Image (cartoon, rainbow, N blue to C red; front, side, top):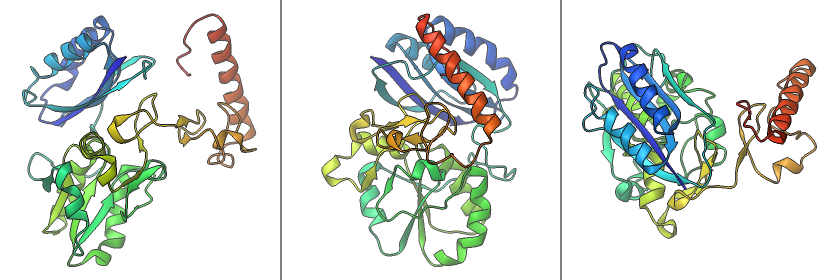
Length: 300
């Protein structure tokens, strides 16, 4: 059983490049894989590994500037959900493309998972899912608005086109682990919205803490690792990835005529050229050869 830790912290890093090598070396030494992003605005990522390895990496992160009180969400995976470790330098740890947005200055009011149901049931509250369309497609809160964005960077334009719909309403926002809402709530405050709330710890903390029998969550929660989705109690869900488009699919989706392993699914069959699909087939062939040799192909 592997421990999976999802973490983020908005805090100024004067020289994020200097933090990269020590963090990567420690994680590799401890058998930890996953993705960690470093930027001048902080750190974000999801990692997995043995219990002792995750603890060692978290101990190290807590020594970084402003990270002593970092919070993270934990779950488990029966198989290692990452093929390798990536520690990357980025312009933003979650890309919104709004240079004036600063979560360290102000954010919305945090709402504990145990209080979330009461808030979103109020008539004067509109609930907005800040995640991307393929994430929303497999699960969201009952009655939540789907902006139908393909990337988080599209959210500000969506808000500008739709904000009049929500005049006089309180706005409750949520995302997978909370990081996107840090920026989204700060953005709305900057747009003059007075009452902005967000789910503390995100969907992951809600699914961990709120019993299924009282839950307002419908479906599964997409996660950015090999498990693909989790449900109540953070149990691994039924989804896999289409390795052509990286969208979640189910066993039933694999029976559709548009599905070909590693090449296409019903969601992306019209998005790629014949040349693309030929390339995907060759990649899938190399993955199969690697498995026959008892190796792990990084593209798999």
